[in-house]
Length: 454
Image (cartoon, rainbow, N blue to C red):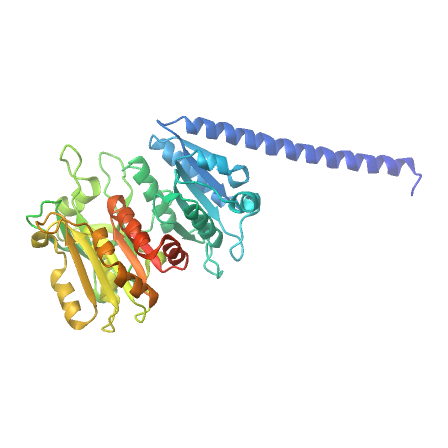
């Protein structure tokens, strides 16, 4: 030990400087947290009713950034939002919340971010009754890891087992994929009802020409549904059954309304992308912004902006895997692509619901041909407006419970496509009744139960 006073002074000075730096860091962290709390409190009061809880588990800060962008998007749409970190999230907060949006990062092979370790140990390790909670989850990950979005899926499974109900299916983001993030924004627009919210990350569009548009259900008591086909102005890109098209909408009154997403009903071998789009109308009878333009205003030969986005969570299995396809309305578009992708090996079963058999039996000639060739093993349809029927597609699920269990026991996967309101929840409840809630949840976690609902 030295007795040199000068060295002692240097040592003391170094310790004081180190303590000062620690104090400054702590002060800055507390100040940042206080500012975040103040901003969150202000956002929470921006809309009517209970604010939406926006919780983030972030390792690098990207998840936190998306959480604040989510909150601002809700606020711009007239919906209050309250932002918290998983580090500050507890079961009581979740129990007291009716709607929550969670942005969840995964580190390494399925591990939680450091800020979520306490949540995993204290909250997810215990039982909770979250039956009053409705949630949406954005899972951030990297497909180069085997456990892609592993922690996000773990949170999703825990919430479902705790009784929470999903507002929509988990949105997976591979290494910051801009298209997936736009899909998340699309779900936010469904919550706020916004139709003019700008894209956070505008896509690089290709040009496509409308080559065909046919009214698919003339005389239907429901809304008009149109079969549209577009050919690329340039080279034909590649895509797979289950993928999504983002169509850029034309500016209206100086406002750019962003994009809309549609399930693709065709394959690259068709040489064009095809859609089945229903004309939506507002309460006063005016057509919807996107559907009105695409089904009424756009002329054959006109060119639009569009990009095709991979939707891996709805890609199909191998031909050898039995496939149960369930949908209603224009949801048959995405299911049609999967049937087109199947070979004559069979093992496909379609359960479909619409209004009337006379007017709304979409793609009937193709379905009958697939039945004859063996591509389609079984076809069950219901028509809710027909005398003597009056059933929705979930009734078909219930009626076929024994056969569904047999198919699932042979390794079948279940794909659902169609309307989120009514159909998706009704089909899910019928599947739970037929297969058991635990079995259906396990199928969801194993990727054997997939949905593309909107």
